[in-house]
Image (cartoon, rainbow, N blue to C red; front, top):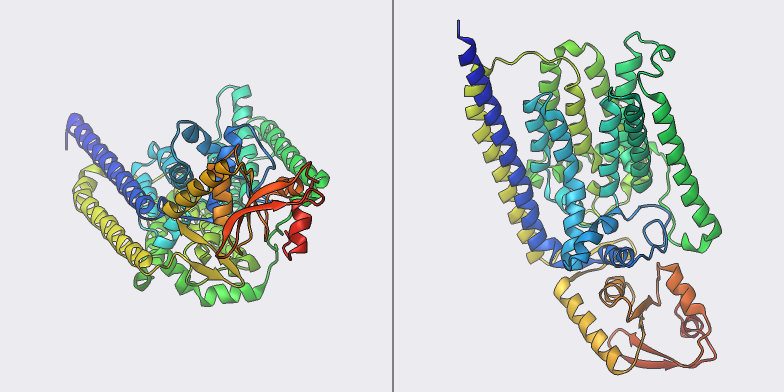
Length: 526
């Protein structure tokens, strides 16, 4: 029989080994993301990203034109808001915005892992392993700004607050749970897909609290329902406030919301193409089986180690699977472009890695099978190098794939009759600088773009020259306040810098018509 001090020493070394493993995985995760930003996100920019540029500039100047992604009634621009401090430190927009977007999408895994660490360090390691093994398409859409990363960050923080069942002082406990509910609602407003995480958290609480013989009324105060109800009502108040904005400003809801429809045909098509979905989550398309195998091993590990949870964890796993299948019935999941990275199908399924991480986290709330550290430590000496080798191999494969994509000029991608314009950042910066110089020399305030699908440069020039130039897209302008400004009758002749397909330069519009009226005569409308 070993002496207690020897057993304690083995336990300490085991925990240090796990801690070192967690640090290595975190470094690997962010090392590849930095590489991805340096090679792609900092070098190329699309129209959605330049709208986030505008949002960052507007917010930093105290201008909040509308609550959602400009021109639409969904998608809070949380990334732009979080990028303001970096922008005020004079970090360029093309670095600040992707950096914040990447952090909002990866921090949930770090938060879940840290939250799980005290309960079970080994499970925390598995959580960190998840984002290290995702595919390139997933990494791209969770690095380039897309307005849904902030939603998952808020929802996961709120879910963990609600699931933790804080039992400190009554007032703080009510505040704790109320904040959790409120953040979950904000997350849902930001990204409808975050409802999968909210549903998981609520399902976990119902299974834990109400399927174990406890009475709802007897535990009303214990479970802090009053605070939760306050958070719920505050969240609903925010929803009504946002709805009221578009009631009094209906013209701001210019871009139609995606249809929220269910279809068994969509489910059938998603299931028939499940291999492509798996491939998008795996390090390489040919290794599509890596993701489902990894998920199966994680679930198997969880169910074996948490055997004393009874039917709770198996039921939670089944409900998660059913919820994912229900989500696949949404017609929105079929709105994607096969060859696209920025508009790939994976963007509507980005919740899946978060859901797996939350499932692992939830398992640690139940009593685990004791681990013999003396036996586990030698196994970890073998397992840790294998994990690191696996993560490094995945990173190398994704790096080579990214190099091939950029080399083949696959950054210009089409979807239906729309054009997702992606341009090199250097070209955009050069165009913005030349435009500014010309406008200053000719006393011009307005820059009007007549080129179809030229939103990237329009919004970028506006962001990079905020306060001195007003940009407007004659084909499709998302910013209603700019459109309304252009509809006003000018007090004198309007000097604009016009950008056509192959010509650009000074145009003077007469004072008897507004800019919009003049463009409509030329065949251009909003």
